[in-house]
Image (cartoon, rainbow over all chains, first blue to last red; front, side, top):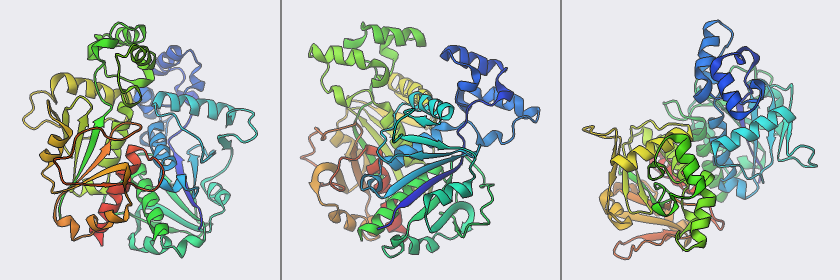
Length: 235
Length: 235
């Protein structure tokens, strides 16, 4: 049986960018955590006023798609605790909007508390791997990549992108049959709240599929695919 | 088509009990939030030392199964954002280990940040409903119930309990066929980290089922059922 590669694409995961360092909301959260602003993870829940102020000055593109580590946390908790992962048939990758690609060890046991997960992501984005210096790190950042590079890194031959403007999901069923699972499958899901992917995937042969007629959260798409892929393998 | 009732059972959701009020870790978090200890949600991540100290004095049974609102939060985010809920075929109920039953409006938009969700749960457990005094509250507590009462409240005729000691999941398939969906189905999932349910369900006709051979998190079981039930309805 092949492996399913879950790729969270253009994920809303980044350290606070320099344009926001001097804003009072950022300075306050840096002081509270005894860190420099650039060492903090950008969090919409705490830094929204800073993000909005910078956006008004045209210094912060993509206001609605940044600072949402909770989405990545939730998707990874859903994926890493899935039956597919327990059975060794899943790999998770987090591609960020800054074009880093995070490789996730399937054995990692992620913190459940958001503030602890966010602390881990700060450490990871600053140091490039967690734990630092380990022979086989649990999380590792590959820098200066692109979404297409991230997908190539998986080695998967079948690529499916989930997007509201895709084809009907019936097309999906063949990729999820036991036969289809002979080859690795990479599924790309936007790791942000809303809107389409903007990366250039023209060099990669792929299908684009929509699930149902309403916008779905990233973890809803992830759990749909994880369960259906696992069910197909069971049959 | 019938409705799926997701019942989180004996959930690890409660206010800090009196036995812990005087512990320094609890006093500290109460001061930090400018609340009384009994107005705080019990959180293992902040109150673990207090929980362990009380457990050593035999004043805190169930140490491993309490103070985990993150599990309820995650299950509800998975359920409320599911396709089944978008299509109006899901109801969520949270039965707590103190035998309250929380009725969840399917239209509620839950906070994504854990600390905000926890604040909402504090308000709910203190006041009995959220928002207070609303004609149709988004969350409502039914007190002095039992798990069996909670299940009866759903009105479902088919009842399936998920437990590591249950029957093989193939039994489940018939409940998930389109035919089986003529009648409402209640699925009971433990809303805590580990171990079996302890409630008396002997008065209720039900099946007990296990998914696979490994322990699964509550949200893994929930997403498995939500996706499979929705797929069966689609066929």
